[in-house]
Amino acid sequence: MKTMNQQSRGRFLLDRGASLPLMLPATLLVVVFLVGPFYYMAYTAMTDLSFANPDQKGAFVGLDNFRKLMRDDQIFWSSFWLTIRFVVVSVTIEFVLGFALAWLIWRFIERQRLLTTLLLVPMMLAPVAVGLIWRLLLQGDFGMVTYYLRKLGILSQASAVFSSPGLVMPTIIAIDVWQWTPFVTLIILAGLMSLPKTPFEAATMDGAGPWRQFVDIMLPLLRPIIALVLLLRGIDAFKEFDKVFIMTGGGPGTVSELLSIYAYRVNFKNWNLGYGAAVSFMVYLVVLILCSIFYKAVYWKSSAERQ
Amino acid sequence: MNRSYKILAIGVLACVLIIALTPYVWMLLTSFKGRLDILSPEPRWLFTPTLSNYPAVFIDKDYLPLVFNSLIISLGSTVLSVVIGAPAAYVFARSDFAGKEDLFFFFLTTRMAPPISIAVPLFLFFTTLGLTDTVYAVVIAHTSFNLSLVVWMMRGFFAEIPKEIDEAAMMDGRSRLGAFVRVIVPLAAPGLAATAVLCFILSWNEFLYAFILVAFEGRPLTVGIPGLITPHGTLWGQVAAVAVVATLPILVFTFLVQKHLVRGLTFGAVKG
Image 1 (spheres, rainbow over the protein chains, first blue to last red):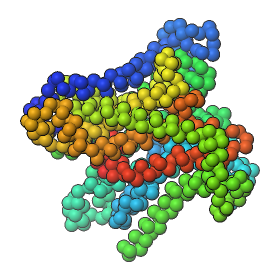
Image 2: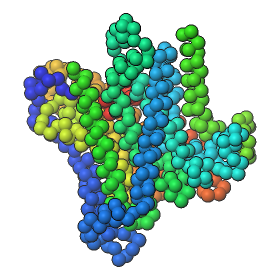
Image 3: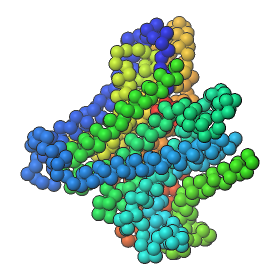
Image 4: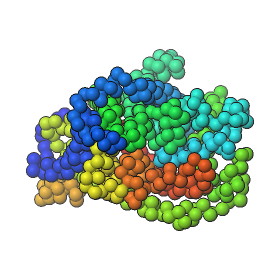
């Protein structure tokens, strides 16, 4: 990311009269449609508003919802930890696989264009379509993947993936890995392509082997990009909704009920909007924390670039 | 030795490609299959293709308007995001003011905001305005996240244009706005086009906002697909046909903007 050159700072300012009108519409739109709703959510979270219960018209209850959430809500906590596990496991696998693939492409393939383009397909599909494709592939009676899994003896004859509680989350993670590994590959590959040649040449002259070069030169140089990939994937995985909603809807039972699906259920199935807002608020909070770490990482990178 | 490593690497990558593409290919095939070919317990890779799934769902089940809704929503939010976002990005690239970087970060948080958190208040808000179940509600919701993509991506593209060009244009008697519209925007056109295509893709693929804000009239394709799934007797040929129409244009677009994709996906942090 390119920020302004230090020397030209102050020398070149937009005339005050021109920058305000250019800036205003964007800021206004964001304030009205995102900051407004955010405060409304924070307020609603402190009421007992419910569309299902006519007695609860939105009386102010202070922090009761949050207290209940923190102390008594077993489902909230189990879906919170489920989400954390989902994020950590899938992002880790995606990172390791994606890095390995990027390295293979970088090291061995000269004409990368077509290959990377084809690799991108899973990630550019609408997540809803991804969910549908896998639901079709994993159908119990006629799913193509189910058939081959049974042939290989991985899945027993009578069972189907999405109706076996023990298999649901690993499958969802595998599908997330299928969809998002190319993202890691693409960005790490861009990082590898931009690496300077000299440190590696110098290391080779000094007799450092490939492994030492990888650990001592390549990884440190790629660190900002690695941080960026992990955070972007982490934030997105934490918000995961579409695929899981289409494939399992959170079930069977609550086995795959990630946090955003739980929030959806409280808000739009139970119509318990006050409590639902408290749940939504917690989701937002985690994303906001991850987001500010991302921002720091980006700036860390651009300051490293300047040196 | 080196040669055999290379062959091994190509083999591994070929396997990865097969894994990456087969599920989508299967969906494509399914959309051209008759009922019996789909329901066969043993997967049928070879079959007599039929085109009947497409008219069955788009004409008989009246899914054609959903394609137009998707188009209106994606185009609408793209145009709105670019028209509002590009000038703001230009200010970020050129101007310096107190709190600039904080405001910039603030734009990022809007992109990252979890839809499930913002959707309820937006839903109530649009209900008050009488806009639920219209494409307008979705256009505005999508603009709220696409806008920050435009601001983040275009700041980088504008910063790459030398400041001397603005100065020269203004020396020639153009106003600041005139210089921006007539000189800078044309110079940034390739970046702007890539950004617009990315906005279009994100909006076209989005599900949750649209799902919550529109129930029937303004439904885009992504919201229409789940409606075809029933606990028993789902017509998968038709589901696949809709999914193909919902994904094929995006894949074509992806190939067009591949050069700028890395930049767009990392909010301008990696040039690619």
